[in-house]
Length: 431
Image (cartoon, rainbow, N blue to C red; front, side, top):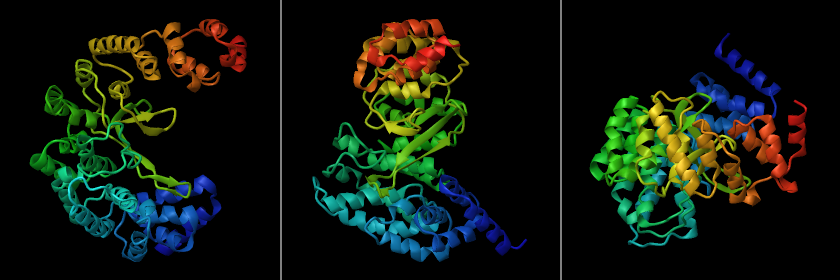
């Protein structure tokens, strides 16, 4: 069958699909360059989300026919963010880099302590989104421009809530200096192009500080576990500790795949019809050396300016400030070194007693096969009573304890009436 026949066959298949199934199919077309003609056809003839997903797919390829569409999007008020932030092709990278260069060159001409206007800040948000995952020479020069002006930028005044990843709890000059290096870190997760990996090393050598985070993130995808540990773990005992923690905070252990995985959110939610938020993940080269977990129990917990933690229940990445959340997210399903496992159990038992009752300690202790007592569950209920209901208590008991049915029934009897789930009790009684 010729190419035209293959294309028509694919279009016929798409026509039979509906809703989310259709969107997923269109989205997956971008996984193979042979589908470019189909994506072009959809971009020119479809509407709504079908057209949007087709255009997002085209941004991953150098397709000259799509360039006029992308140029028009970039000139719009939204900068075509919803489409172009997904682009990784050099054609799209060069296109957006020219606009980004104009914006930041003008922005950096302002004096220190400059206050971004509402329009300036929104343009900043959108252009920052467009940098993601792009590796052409023009875009790499954007990073060099940002690195050169990072100190001045950190003196500017603007909102602390920048996008889905950058939502600072403590907004200072030092935390502002994390924005551009973290953007490179997330770009490498999105697209571990060798050119971005080399750039991370270049900027770390020239500027140091937060750029080290990007270099370490690059190493997640290039270094073996033992080499990674030997190279970076000593820095946890130095003034560069925070940069190492910022890198580790981008990881979690995926219990389904049993792989340490880098994950991040990106984009913005402006309103219901203008939502560019997305999240993405990538498995690292090798699971972390277990010695990372041991050394993390030995340093004093501190607040982390930026942290991404993957919530399996919510199915999305979420930002937290807790040091313990980093450690909990990294815990593997199985341990080779039982001494390290026991050390972690001791650490989390101690931290659980010191804290107010956050669920992360229950999750960690259960994973480490430490018995969850009634007192621990009661403490969790009292911690945020407004967030606890008769519906999530059974979920907590079933997923995070190893209690017998009888233990669960006895516990339900002690709860106030508004927290008792009669359906859960009936299921236990009818077993």
